[in-house]
Length: 215
Image 1 (cartoon, rainbow, N blue to C red):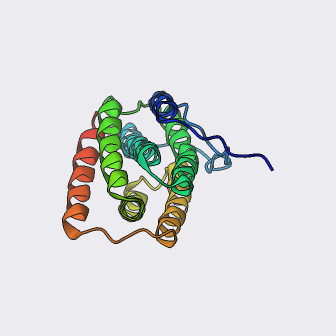
Image 2: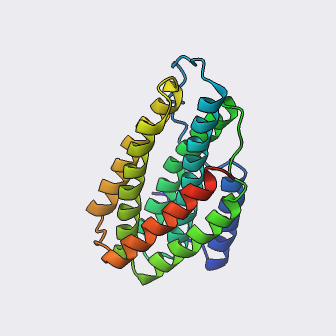
Image 3: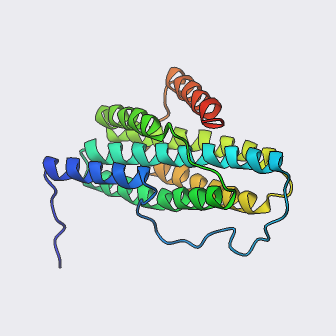
C-alpha cells in the first residue's frame, strides 16, 4: 500500500502561494465538471441587461475567489490530515465554479473584479483565524459560509434578466454544489458559530457585493 506524503510547513506555505497565484489568474485546479450552460441558447439582451448580468456574475466570480482563499487557508493551518485533505478537495470542487463564472464573464464581454487580490487576502486571513481555533470551528465556518452563499445565489437567480438562461443554469448548479459542501462540513463535525461571527460575515459579504458590482 502506497503511503501518503507528509508535507512540511514550508511545503504547505509554498503550496498556498501557488494556489493563490492560480486562483487569481483563473487557473485554479478543477474536477473538470462540464460547463452547465454548454447547451443553453444565448438569447439577445439589451446592453443594460448584459451589463447587469455581467455585474452579477462578477460578484459570483469574486465569491469563488473568496472560497478558494478560505479553503486554502483552512487547509494550511488545520492540524488534522483528514480535514486538510477535505479542504483541498473542496477548493478543487469550487475551482469548477470559478472557471464557469470566468467563462460566462468572457461570454458577456466583461471583466473580473479588480479588487480580487484584496478579497483573496482578506478571506485568507479569515480562513486562517477560523482554522487555528480548531477543526470543529473551521468546519462550522465553512458550513455558515455555504449557507450564506446559497442564500446569495438564490437572490441572484431572481435578479438575472429573464433572457440570461445561461447564467441562470450556472448559478443553479453552483447552488446545488454549495448545499453539498454545507452538508459535508456539518456531518464532519462543524460547530454552530456564535451570532456575532455570522453578522460579521454578512457585513463583509455586503461590502464585497456592493463594490464588486461596479469594480
